[in-house]
Length: 565
Picture 1 (cartoon, rainbow, N blue to C red):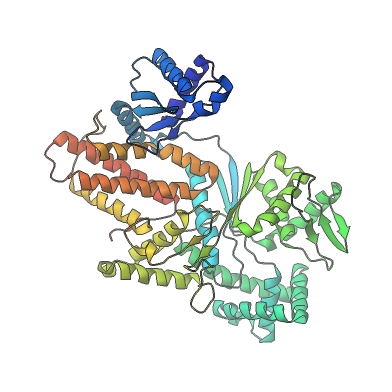
Picture 2: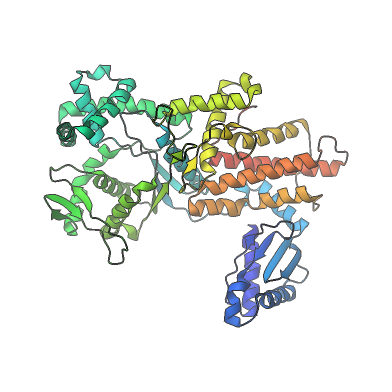
């Protein structure tokens, strides 16, 4: 809203100067000097054989001749070595904040409506969720909610890993122990899954037997199908329980198994385009390009024994999505280590012509590490189950904040979610991060509890005080007041950047900055004892808007607000 308006005017000025420069404005990181800056003069200096400051001064001069006494700005000046500094007028700041307060979604302009499929979560069935499953669920849910906020038609699919080698291993283990279908529990699956996985690594013969079970399951073996259905039923019940706790939800719970009915039609399409090749008895699709700097191996479509692989089921799932949803985009939120796999899959889609109507994005993420910089583990050396992580996080929060012992259990669960989610989402998803359970459980610093405490602190003031005004007047009373208002103005730009980059971290960090400004404002300005009624009501309205923004944006991070803490 703000940046767009400044850039429109700047574009007119640049064209009037005859400068072929993009009108790109950035928020200033020195709020004591100005609110926004233009630094395009530096890149244009060599072209014109002038100094950057000369170019900036000519732009400011032209601005003054076109927009005489511009009411939107308190000051526009060229400063050495060549920046143009823009300082907004109090009137313009408050008029914009009033529009944000009055209009739905703070007056943010919505892009052209598109259909977007987002694939995240992706747990394997037959084992409880552990810390390694966190990021896909948390990051994916936030990206989905940001897309929905901008009115995209979003279709979410968990895409279960339910038809790979691990199913053959688990069925083999169940049969070896003569465990009948009705006796299968999540505890039994939790024990058998790692035991069989380890056994297959040490015994090639058993691994081959498990692979054969998987192949026969895929071919329709009735006994194995019954085992599969029971394993899936037990697993899904536990997976949905955990996702409900995390407030993570999907439109569809499809898995690899659901894609098998599309493989014949996909195979026919691939054969018609002569994309399938035989290599040592297996069917492959060559995806390398002459421009590749690194070798990109072919995608293995079907193994020599006739079994299908992960790449095949992903392509079959894309076939289904293209035909059922006709999406403009398909997004995948998975571990960065799957980057090569998705490059292969997307290149097959390109050969099939799918990319003419649909774009594909792999939104990779790093790992959750412990204080040693290695993937987060329990003392026993294994990745903690999410139930264990939730319990330990709750204990850490209560240890850091003993006065919260009497909190409702539902509020404590909200705090656990906030701790875990904000610890993750404040980091660029592409980076690994260290999860320090004690650090992130405090109400001090860059943590989920700090954000929620700020909201509740301000809300307690608003509940006690009354105001009747509906619009801010044209005054700004001091520096902390102005800093808060300027920060609120950055909402649209922040949200759009978070949307375009698929980085919830941009939004999470913005919320932390708002809270820093809100707390500084609260400490500096003693609203409760203020006698100046006009000032008091303006500040109460300002804080109402700030808390409204906090609440709506926390929802996009899938963080709820407790009743008290």
